[in-house]
Amino acid sequence: MKNLILLELHKLRFPIIFTLILGMIASVVLCSTIYKSYALEHQLEVWEVGFTFFNFTFPLVAVLPTCWLLYFERKNEFVKYTLPRTSKRKYLFSKWIVIAGSASLIMFCISFIGVVTALYIIPPIEIIYGWISPDTDEPAPSLIHFHFAAELFLEKPLLYGLLLSIWKGLVCGVVATMGFGFSLFSRNLFVILTGPFIYMLLDNYLMQMLAFDALRLYVAFEPTSELVENISILSFLVGPMLALL
Image 1 (cartoon, rainbow, N blue to C red):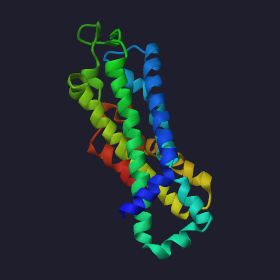
Image 2: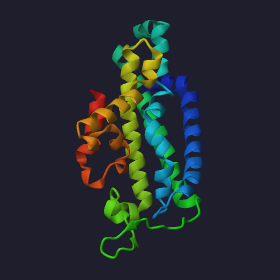
Image 3: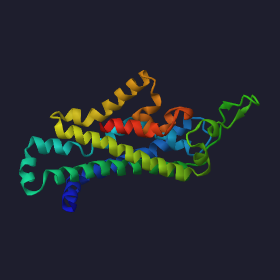
Image 4: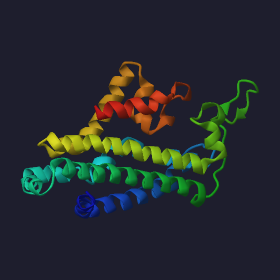
């Protein structure tokens, strides 16, 4: 099994490394620029507004580096020559480990480098309160009232960013698993590489139409996209579980 995993990593090392480096550079650039046009209350919000692009495109980040390989191996009948030398289960399991694991690692690194950029590289932001307190009719801090996991976000932003980056990586691994499923059965490369992204768009539309906004896969990846009072443990579980069905 170890040799099979190393073999898959060797095959996919260049697209994985390329996506990782490109994504981290993009994360740093976006987190260093986009925040300038926003009124923010906390330094870590620099990461939140800068990461919006990846919140929308994470299904593509999950599948583009790796899920194409099995398609070409099936097309070229490479699989037929490989299976007599190892079990089908081990062969496919090693592929899944590399696909899901690399997607998780890539997204974690892209996200956490944005956190580090926001907290330690970007100069301290000018704090602007855009919420008017109903008690005083004056601008007041709003994050403690309206932000997901507000106390952790405000008091331990690095830990908040680390935990959410780990979670984003895990969700990306789930989406990569979906792409792996497409690559097992589909004969259309376009479907394999865009299927998870299209699924997310359909999931967004259907869940909102059914008034289950907080159960969307998008919300599981980025919980701050939904009102904090609507977020529950189901918001983190339902979307990924449906994606695996």
